[in-house]
Amino acid sequence: MPIKDSELILNPDGSVYHLNLRPEHIAKTIITVGDPDRVDTVTKHFDSVDFKTHKREFHTQTGVYKGKRLTVISTGIGTDNIDIVFNELDALVNIDLETREIKQELTQLSIVRIGTSGPIQKEIPVDSFLIS
Image (cartoon, rainbow, N blue to C red; front, side, top):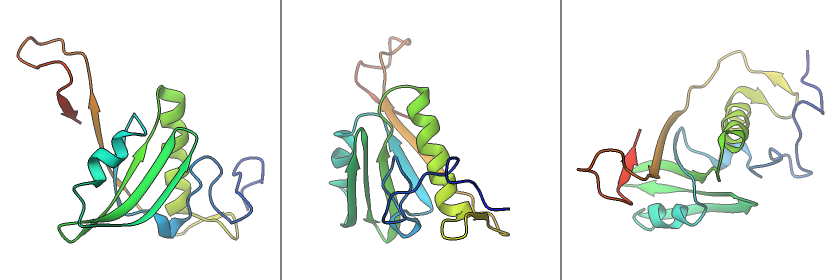
């Protein structure tokens, strides 16, 4: 049974609503960062960037680093934004956006989070990069 329009909102170009992405815009490995400006900080190390989009706090770039295709996307602040990002990424790879049907074969994305934090341990300096 197709997913209702109200449950999966698409833009006129067929991209998912909040992220403004279509399936071909993302890699199977995703790096998430909170701050939209941090996307450029990560992708400046890429060999090439072949796709960029920005809508609200969701800034996305996809490119190649040492032969591997990667996507970097900002989530903004808060768990509600992260929920939007993860749900829309899941829809991009596991729902046929034209038929609105769940695909028979599901795809699992690899997601790495890079962020900064005020440290609790004294041996971690303020503004250190933390990866989980």
